[in-house]
Length: 270
Length: 309
Image 1 (spheres, helix red, strand yellow):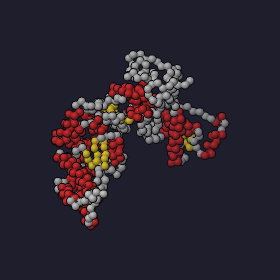
Image 2: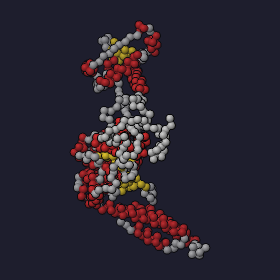
Image 3: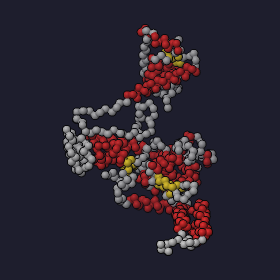
């Protein structure tokens, strides 16, 4: 029996075999009466259960990718998890994001508007007094990252790589020596943190020997703020954040900018 | 050709001299880069004025290109210098930051500053960074990394790789009565694990026999793990393979306690040749209380069969 001609208005779907009978959904499900997603586009019929499984797989995939703190591309989601369910992808992603928020307290956020790359951010504001009982996060690199971020901000949003090492050497962290906790610190800072999008690493022109500059990456602004970093640095110094007026003013401006309603709300949409 | 566009003939000597001066200027500025950016000196302005003067003598593209190169460099340096000026205003002292960090994390500063975390004992280094991480976590909204709470059944530590699902669900051709295809069950893994563990334990046993020739080892002392009942049972399971395959013998000593003895090469063959009357079976039953009693009676403090990792 030949498959019916493609009549869906989408090119390239003639390779699909015809859908078989499916349970018709009643009202009250998120999938609409015929297994279609919202929007009423003509859809393949799928059971509620299959779609639920897809959402669950998405959630699990995102959680596991987050273990390495690597941003997840939409194409990865489509290729490894969604597959044939591509037509309902926006709904799947929306439901997955809901689940992540309600169950885990994590928000699925787009790294930058229209980047189609996603990260997980905690919605729960941490409590300082809980520091002692916090679990180990697996990688202690987060502490090192925080210091580097603080250094960058206090030095005016950008710092030379050589200056970072001058500082870290005093803490026993060297670019060329193996570290008992971090392994290869140079790789951690200039590659891993960059790939995780916490830092930007750029070559400085006309430098001899070659030097690089480090700045905050887009993910940093999602997970923390200038004010928080300043307060952290101030706490370490046992001083008031206002003791650094220039940085304090910038942090205030940043807070004000965040309070304004943002265009391009970071919600997962198609 | 429009005469205005023609490059004027001039003194080659002079052109060469101009180029040489430009290069010298560029080299000099690069050399003084650090001072130019970080101090309040006027050297950048002076260099620009010198380049200005040189430019008066420039009539050809070749020299003009050098002038352009110099300008690009000067512009970059100017940008850096202004950036530096800005950050100087707020007086952030990196060295002091370091010292405060030590106090903040709570590492007792007994030794010289630069010895504190350098080549020191790893325990202290780890403590420093883990404590710092815990405190720093108060200031970010980092999502906690996902792990299964109770670990996995694997005998090896799990490989730290994100496990990605590559299954494409075949949503078509599915009759509603047919169950979903079974995921391939990893039965092979279990068999390999058993073999591997048996071999490993056999190795441990043989090492013991090599180190203590002509002696036997108490069975219970060998298999019992005072910290884990489950591991004790596993050890008994694995040792039973060793005995079944004839790599060791189990017998009762004069106190009627079981002991393990090595099997010499000619004896090994003997066991296999013996007829049905030679096959013996033994059953060991061990309850949690029994295990505790054995640990107490034999005063076992450390397991002889150590974990693989």
